[in-house]
Image (cartoon, rainbow over the protein chains, first blue to last red):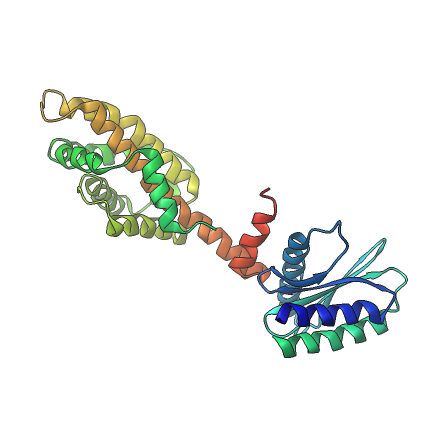
Amino acid sequence: MREQMLKSILSDLNGASADIEASAVISSDGLTMAAILPQDVDEDRVGAMAAAMLSLGERTARELSRGDLDQVMVKGENGYILMSHAGEDAVLTIIARKESKLGLIFLDAKRAAKAIADIL
Amino acid sequence: MIDAAEELRCFRHVGGMDASDTDCLSNLAELITPALPKLTNDFYDQLINDPLTEPHVRGRVEALKQTHQGWLESLFCGDYGEAFMERQRHIGRVHVLAGIPPLFVAASMSFLRAQFPRLVAEHCAGDDRLDCSTCLASLLRLLDLCQYLIDRAYEEHRLDLLSQATGMSRKLIENLVMLNKG
């Protein structure tokens, strides 16, 4: 039931912008709770790595006195990966195209993260 | 992830440890205990004469010898249940806190594995109750078990350090490690 609700949020998120290619909700231990990812993507790997990136980002932000972590962004040649908290125990991961309007992606991410946190 | 108790059960089963090992070691106790002080002294001579190990024992050799001899005697106590296991784990934790590298534990066990065949042969020959090679096998199995339990402390410590440095939970680290398995 909760998985369906989470998938519904992800489906709305992916549909909200042509720039968002995929998304997933991951537990803080790196296990996938819900995902809408391309078929050739390994859900388990994405989950663990996204959780790891967020943990490391959080630790780094604190170590360098940047305050509480807002999000982690990876910029690659072919696009972006955004990771942010969705409540205390979950991570929202968004995969976006390189042409993305980041401001809009951040806004969509924030709304989705809040909706996910409310469910969890 | 396999839990520690199940790992231990598997270790004992595959290694062939059973009640006969306990009997062997108990019977060996009386014969071999007189030889243990010299074994400890020989071992510490090795440590004192190596530039890597000497700094770790400097100024505390006599106290460490007493502890080492106590541990050697415990190998023949005849009771290898949970209390014995926990003592080995505790030894591992103490080694970690004292900053003793895992190499030293491995080298120490290697020293004992080289010395015990001669000692067992010398001290149980002529005693009709004991089969020397069986007793030696029991002793070597027990050393392997002790090393396994002590080594786990080093692994746990490294994982704890990684967790503290990165902010990743231990569970997340285990999940990351599992990614490359199959």
